[in-house]
Length: 328
Ligand code: NDP
Image (cartoon, rainbow, N blue to C red; front, top):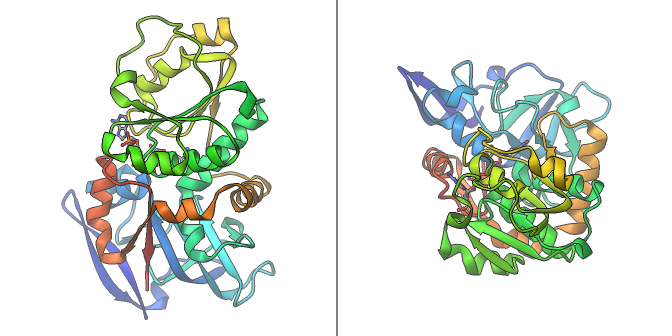
């Protein structure tokens, strides 16, 4: 038997309850993992909301798009009992049962070995949000960003993706400007390494002039929508924006002028289906480039029964940093 946060559908609502399940309830898969920690991402907030936020298709369901733990059983030669593993993405926690449980069973292809130097708790403090922040920084570097090129903007900075992006970039020697709608997070963001705080309201207006002053050499954007459109017009010549999220909206009311006159690059970042080699590259860089003391400063500890309330809070943009869920 194991404990899980089970989502049941009652009308349009999804009711979450911590329940004891038999191992026979687990989905099919090659590797059974004793989960130690999971976490909370924006998508988990969706899965825990009414109708599974449109990403859960079948009930009962176990959400949790990330987990880290120890292999209990494996029919795949890449993993053996006792191995420490991490899972992010692959629609686990959406169409496949996820990490809000003491046990999970998944395809071996979806796992990576726990990166050397990290604990399972630290891996979940990173989670999909932090892993994606690293993918965004890698994409910016691959398109020529260096600290000498100028300031880098991070939007949605006090959230999960934003907090990790600020800490990584500052650790690499970048000048980081952090956009937040929560002025009370200024001290937190400065401790993570932000050298400038930009009020969300400064970037809230929709594009009026397609080009504004050349301000940012790069941007990690967790917000999308009108803010992303506005930022495109403020990029320096040849600068790149890594489009990660849609916390502020999925539409893009933008002009193509920044692409045509300033050679601005808009880089799409997907964490869900990233090939194995790219995942390993990102985790290796997280080990070397994310200061662990800063990661710890982002962590809010939680247990399974806290998740329904935390899921609602993350959708309202009220969660600061990274939630780490001790499932045991
Ligand atoms: P969080 O809720 O932790 O962070 C989002 C932040 O965005 C908030 O903390 C807030 O920051 C800001 N924000 C919220 N609402 C608005 C708004 N209406 N307008 C402007 N800013 C807003 O979520 P995550 O960091 O986990 O995820 C961020 C986004 O990235 C989500 O859209 C998520 O779906 C996406 N994502 C995409 C991935 C991919 O593979 N592409 C992987 C992981 C996440 P502040 O208070 O500082 O303003």
